[in-house]
Structures are given as C-alpha cells and as structure tokens.
Image (cartoon, rainbow, N blue to C red):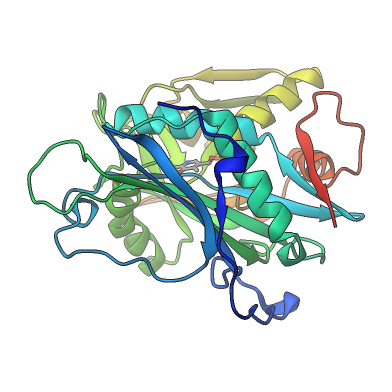
Length: 360
Ligand SMILES: *Cc1c(COP(=O)(O)O)cnc(C)c1O
C-alpha cells in the first residue's frame, strides 16, 4: 500500500461559509467549523480516500457495527491563538496514544506523521475559527470507529477516521475548586480491560457514576480500582494528583488508568522544578488519613480540557473532607499558570512542547 501524503488529501469546498459564534458564549463542544477531515480503511486498501470536506452529517446504516459493539476511540487536543500564530501542545503524543488505543480496540493504526500533517492542513484552512479571547481555544476531536454494516461480532473490516473542530470556551470556570465524590459502587475500568485506551465505552461506563455524583451535589466521581475498590484511579475523566507533606503523589499507570498527556507534562514540569513526584498505588484510606491529620495540602485533576482543576472537597457516603479550606492551593495555581504559559507561548519553552502550526 502506498504511503499517503498531504498532497493526496482531496479538498471539497463549501458553497457558503458558516457564521462564527459569539466568542463570549462558546461553551464546550457546541459549535463546529466549516470543514472536517475524513478517511477510510479496509483490509484490502489500508487507509485511503483522505478528504477535507464540508462539516455535516455522515450517512450510516442502522447495522453499522460501532452502534452495536462500540468499537470506537478518540483523542482530544486544543489549538491556541497567540499573537498571530496557531499553536498546538505536544500533538505527536495524541497520535501516539490514538494508535495505542487502536491497538487495544482491534482498530487499524494510522500513520502518525500523516495524521499530524493532515491536522495541520485542516487547521491551516480553519485558522480563522481559533478564538482569540483569554481561556478560549479550538478543541480538536480526532476519532475512529467501526463502520462495517453487519451484525457479525468481529473487528470491523471498514473503519472511518475523522477530525472535527469546535471553538470552545474554558471547560470549567477556570480555577474554581470543585467537589468530587469517591465512588464505591460502580467502577470505570478493570485489570486487563480497556481503561488505558481512550475508547467510547469507558465514557459510557462512567456516566451512571457521574449522574450519581451530580445528584449528591458533586461535580465528578473519583474512581477507585475495579478489583478491590481500594486504590485511587482517576477523577472523572481526568488524572488526579495529591500534594502531601510537600511532595506530589499520583496513581501509577497500571493499565486501567488513562495515560494523560497533561498528567505526563505535570510530572515532567514538577520534576524539572526540583519537586518530588511519586507514581504509585495510592490507597484511598491513606488519603483520608492525610486529610484527617492535616497533611493533605492540595488535590487537583489534570486533562486537556480543564488543564489543571482544583478539588476543594472529597466526599464519601459517610464523610466530607475539605481540602485547603476549599480554596485553590498555591501549587495548583502555579502549575496551571506554568502549563498555560507554555501552551500560549508566553514563556521560554525549553522542551518544544508548544508547536506553531501556521500564521493567521
Ligand atoms: C483524555 C482523558 C484524560 C486526560 O488526558 P489528557 O491527555 O491530559 O487530556 C484522563 N482520563 C481519561 C479517562 C481521559 O479520557
């Protein structure tokens, strides 16, 4: 099969461009740009027919396999506007992870370099859609799904990969602490399962717990491990960190935790600043003890959408643990600033994490 290059991407022009939404009322994932990227895969032809075409509904057959068996993966990243330039944050890592998810979900891998080039091309076309206001970005959603129209249970023999773009405001209201409920009934992932893959079903599995947390007055669920429900895994759809006795601890990547790019960046950033970061199994009881003894200094979650999100309260069926008097801690604030300053190109970026895609 021939290696695809960007010159193979067919461009289909829209008749009429959309009107851009009000930047002050974007919300998250509600508006979509003029164009999307699409390509298809079959075992015979590999990936083929790459296209940038008008954003719009896709036709599907009711038997399309993803609707029945959930063979679907995705990524989430952001493009930022800074001083006439469009920037991405460590985008190679997203395509690396997409392939790790694909591998686990028996979906075909993509050429990571081609996927990145195709994204650059789409962004070049859609660059005026990247909002300029503070805290806003163009959210990028690459996704891949089984598009075979049969009910047979097997890895799909027709797959679609697509990228859609959504101008978005900040996901949460900045650095306001939220409350998180320690979920002791449902789990989101199990040993040997698909927790580390960014796959649709993990989200489906988490919605019930999320609903329960919301009903109890919490913003998110804190997920415990799926075997003993004893060890901390994730906070909602984000990774979680604790600052205890002046060092940072976070659950180790054990196969059921999603390897967040923000998580990795936070660990690398903290270590480069001389801070101690431990990646290990964290019994939730240990966290409760630190909270009681006053040694639990800060708790925060990390993810592309919110970057760093402070947790002001941990709730259980019987107890409430208020963290740092419900206020955003100084380490959380510093990390948020350090990371967003790199993303927005405001500080020296020794590691080349912030990539300039094009000029506007
Ligand atoms: C995407 C995701 C994260 C965060 O990953 P980032 O690469 O930092 O955005 C964490 N947990 C889950 C379950 C996720 O799906």
